[in-house]
Length: 153
Picture 1 (cartoon, helix red, strand yellow):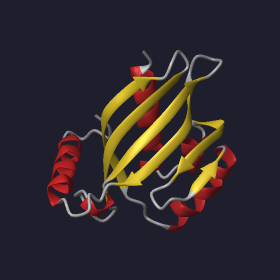
Picture 2: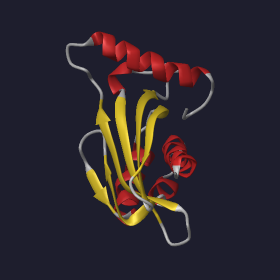
Picture 3: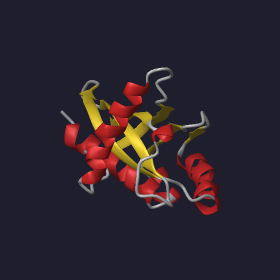
């Protein structure tokens, strides 16, 4: 089971985002890997992903991710699915902003050197319309991770 390797890949992804490093972020994707952003934007391949993120990182003070992994599931011998809940801490704050809570999914594949690359990263808003108790529970679960100083638990 690739649990630890895929969790590590995911943590490197969030670390690259939090460092505002488009090159490091894009390098984690396979040649035809796809990123689907919070706003629905899509980029495919390292070059496209890098090109999409570089101006965002240079022109906007992006918030930092904190995540709680809910599941890592093997998809045969060469694939895996990771699902997580995330919160974001705006740059001018030290608290999570519940309006930016999200669900993230990563599909990863084992590559020839035995490592792992991202095939699909999807970041979906978790607004829980009409269910404020779910927003509160999501935020509290991610806040418990943030309180430890970790990026991913």
